[in-house]
Amino acid sequence: MAEGALITPVSKECCEALMNVWIDGSPALRQTQQGRIAVVYEDGRTFVAEVGSCTVNEAEYLGLIEALKGCKEGALCKKCHFGPTF
Image (tube, rainbow, N blue to C red; front, side):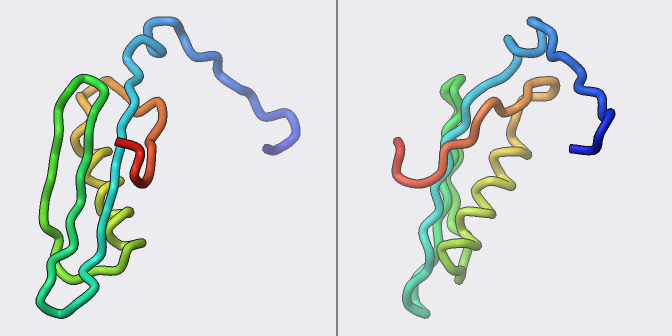
């Protein structure tokens, strides 16, 4: 952080709008397989999708992108949990 940079404190109201998000992505290991992603939000919403041919890293990133798209307007992700933590 640059010297003299200001850190804005987070208000209590903002913290109450934060939520946990769990994501996982699995690769397509063979040509005939489809990669898959799963997103679980703290409020109970879920999202599962096939994402085509991809590596494990691509699947994880696609899961993160979908998780961020699906966050409620005004609510921020407190922490994204990667991997088999369901």
